[in-house]
Image (cartoon, rainbow, N blue to C red; front, side, top):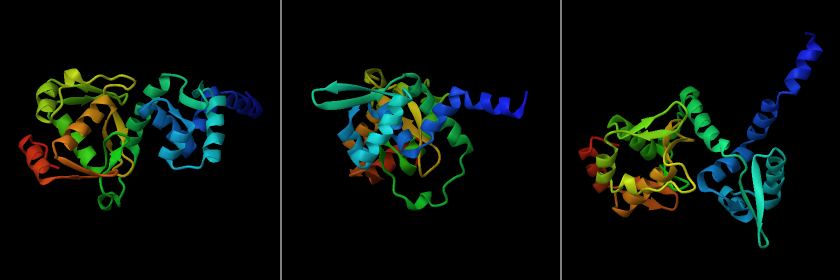
Length: 229
């Protein structure tokens, strides 16, 4: 095959076009947000992502044309959602692969822990997820999804969560989310949200905006469970 023929075949590969759309940081954040939080209006996306509406609109148009997002009208509002449920599988897989190959962030220790959407992130979130795996309450999968382990009911009950009562709804039950500063996974999904809510409610984690801290009571409680942070 000639060089010209090889280049033509490469240009015709639709995977390259799809990956190019996801390679833009803002477009990837939009897809990530819709995967984590479900459908949202343009104004809500702009507010949550902290970008001007005109800039966001241009990227949403690109995503629509690539058939990665869909839009429906709700009165005068345009509501965006992921166009293909396969993206909900792709994102945890990308996080899983990235977490294995990414270099640690040398400045991560100086960044306070925080929430990521509605689950715990940063050093606290990463250490908590690691502790749950060590106790065999959770088992990670190669595709980035997370299964419940044999110790899940008892362990989560001690953390204030009845796993049998957690409904996935529009989310998956549990999957890995790559932590931007720790370069390691923390727990996302409906179970991650429920765990964050339970620990904040019982005062084990103190939240101030998006910043979170482990309270003395929380440190003691986790240490008793063999999950010192």
